[in-house]
Image 1 (spheres, rainbow, N blue to C red):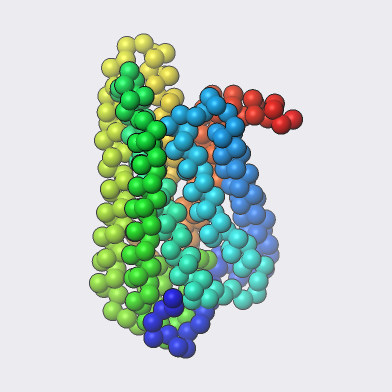
Image 2 (cartoon, rainbow, N blue to C red; image 1 turned 90 degrees about the vertical axis):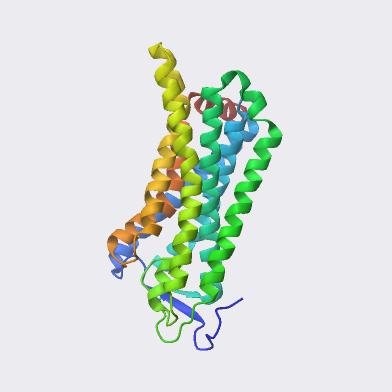
Amino acid sequence: MALRNHSTITEFVLTGLSDDPRIEALLFVLFLVIYLLTMMGNLTMLLVIRADSHLHTPMYFFLSNLSFVDLCFSCVTLPKLLKDLLSEKKTISVEGCLAQVFFVFFSSGTEACLLSVMAYDRYAAICHPLHYGQVMSNRLCVRLVLISWGLASLNAFVIVLLAISLDFYDAQTIHHYTCELPALFPLSCSDISIITNILLCSSLLHGLGTFIPIFFSYARIISTILSIRSTTGRSKAFSTCSSHLIAVILFFGSGFLCYLMPPSGSSLDLLLSVQYIGVTPMLNPLIYSLKNKEVKAAVKRTLGKYL
């Protein structure tokens, strides 16, 4: 489906991250490394969780889904960015732009839901350890993941409908390196006030709807940890959720700034977007592997099988 009333518009031109060939060459190497590390890290996480029976628990079931979403997130934008860094003219078709808008919101929305679900899992593990197996049953885990994917799909579909309703005529240069809906607003000759409000409400509902459960889960988790008398017990309890907390701060911190700040086309906008889309999916498997003894042990066992 194409944008309506756009017989003269078949593609958009992206300004990219730089117009200096030397800087673009350096950026190509940088983002190629980021992309390869993201693919390798998340694929390794998926393989290790799949292969090691010690990791067949709700926490790692959610983590495997998070790794898969991070793979999708990177594949939506980074290959196109790498291609554009080697191209003199950076273009994207209208259909390709719509697809990118959908999958960016779908991937990020799913990741937000999964991080919220994982916070509830950590709350159940720390605050109700004796009933953890009953609370986090296999059926509930599967349902929570399906709900996460479903809600993200619905939100992304609404966002794409907003993009389809925009009219464009002469202005077709997107001052960004990827197709993000806020970057399309300055190019539209439509009245975007209603669409902007809908996007803001949708982002707030989805963002706060996933962040608030995380906040309350961690409020209860911290309260429970502080009530533990032994230092060793507190340290062990905190270590089980520290990786997730770091991932939450990275994702929601850059995400809220990206979509709640008015788009200005500045270097700060691009930097936040790079952090949100490129860096966070790369760091997630590193965070969970470097700070988690169970994952480290599982990696050693898995490598021992295949080497």
